[in-house]
Amino acid sequence: MTQLRTSDDTTAMILSGSTVSTSRRDSAAWARFRLLLRMPLPLTAVCVLIAFVLISIIGGPLSFHAANAQNLDLRLLKPFTLEHGWLYVLGGDGLGRSMLAELVYGMRTSLLVAAIVVAASAIIGGAIGLISGYVGGWVDTAIMRIGDVIVTLPSLLIALAVLFVLSPSMLNLIIVLTITRIPVYMRTARAQTLAVREQVFVEASRALGARSGRIVFHDVQPLIVPTILTLAMLELAGVMLSAAGLSFLGVGLQRPSVDLGTMVSDGRSYLAVAWWATVFPGIAIAIAALAANIVSNWLRAVSNPMTSGALAASTTRNPEA
Image 1 (cartoon, rainbow, N blue to C red):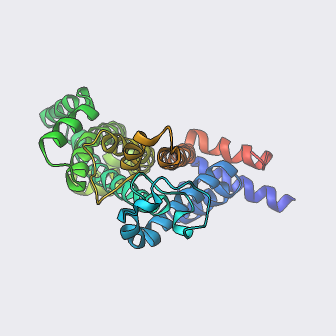
Image 2: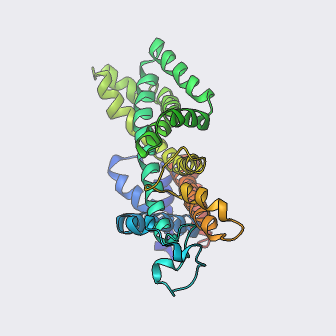
Image 3: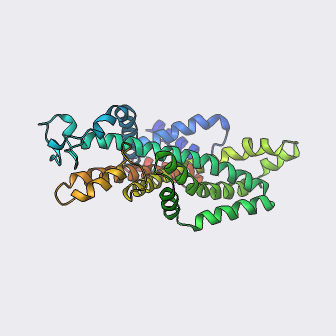
């Protein structure tokens, strides 16, 4: 019992930032993993996201043909029957396409678009915000004004206008969503950089003659990356919903490419007689977005020194929390 309590106290110290040596980074990662195992809700959300990713990677390429193969004899086939094979266990849509195959391929497309958009916007926006916050002056002012202009315009309206002028495609959808998400990371990275650049270790690096580039990318960047990663996980859900909404409105992905929003849009005409054509993809969107939000909230809690120690202590006192 004493050994277990000592281990849990060490976990709390590492997570709360009491142990700041760089040699303890692996220990901190292991402590967070142990903490995750004691928290059923975040652990379930992580497992759900991993399952979606694995299904998309393995089953996505294999389901492309079945997701677009039409069979009017199986039009609006009711779900939960194996009479026509396991591909139609979730029924058929308005053109007799397999709902199961469409869900697998649609999830793959939705996750792929969201991952690319989040990665691109986080890298570009984070780098711009980092440089802007460190350099300051007119460079910072000019960059922030551009970001303010993008933020003041509704992202959905921008995406609708651009995609209406351009041909709807995956590339155009990714570009539009990336541009609308860059200011979020840019402003977050700038705010973090403004706080970090005044720290003593940054002043010490300047006094030792370190160049600005080395200070930015070796001293400041590692301290803002955890915040950017947490924000990226939170944005993953928002990007999935935005892409699904654009596809639902008819300006997102088009056949043969299909995502969950396209499935909801195709199935709304048959909602009164074939609820499964809309409900199944809608549930998939909701589950993926909810899981991403739960994981992002957990990452934010364990990455914040103000809350991580208390979180570790609470799970130690109440393992079922």
